[in-house]
Length: 385
Image (tube, rainbow, N blue to C red; front, side, top):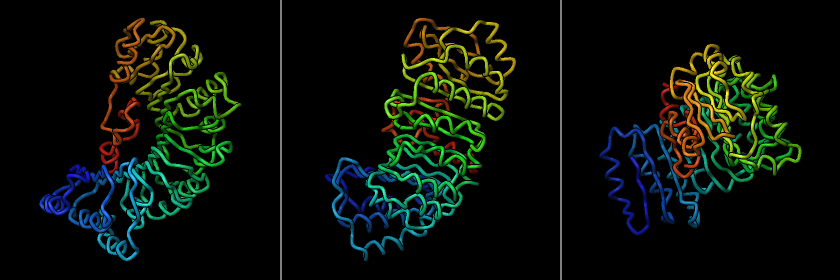
């Protein structure tokens, strides 16, 4: 159920009575599209307490509103008593908004939480360390947006999650001391990680991309990266040649385990020539592929790839976009749509897109990630069950 509250229409009591009638409700989304009332925490505590079977909870607070003062500690304690049991129920949690409000939700143990998505501002420097202590079973972490994260804090969280976290998505990650890297600090601790997804607003230095291929990084089943040219702006050491080599090194390092390998990039950014094509046959279990090539592979070359990687030819999810000629090649049919930008753009929609969680991030398209390029609650839930 989606409850969208606007100040001019919001009536607390009818919403509370409605939730109390929905005794089998399992998915609740509370979205505040205006300034919350002064007794916000108390009302929210009553709303969630009316939902004894909810396991998926989304809380959105409009970024463009001044939330006003936080309630007194005494009232927060009343909310805490109401929310403690609710926290024990949760398996999937998504928080969007000013940090001071959703942090009240995270002051409780969440022992059953499997996936957590956050897009917050007003970050506290011990946030991830404290969160990891309360979420010992977390399998999916999606950092859609967060301001000025301290790497040592996120690293502390990853140490705790090292044996359980299977999927990590990072998009807008404004970090202190970026030049020292991000992924190079995190990956050695994430021994169970299977899926790594990097969004277009992430600002990773070249050393981080290279770190994904290192021997101390976990072996991935899925790697996705939607790239923009900001990768060159923030690292003077980065150039097309070095990034191409780093991506090929990633593919080779993880080829024994890869099912999905997606590199989406802006046109006229860079291309792989045909270098990466020479390595694709090494990933025998590859099911979904997108890379940009300078030249069109021959029919014989594609047939050789499909022989080595038979799952690529079993569905329309196996795609290559050939950049220079704006040509889409479907590996399932080996048919080309030449000289058509629309054909290339349409290929983004021809792959499977489960429901995404954050509609505001709708400019991404990727296999298995929806338009937000974030693993969906549904897919995570299925894995958990």
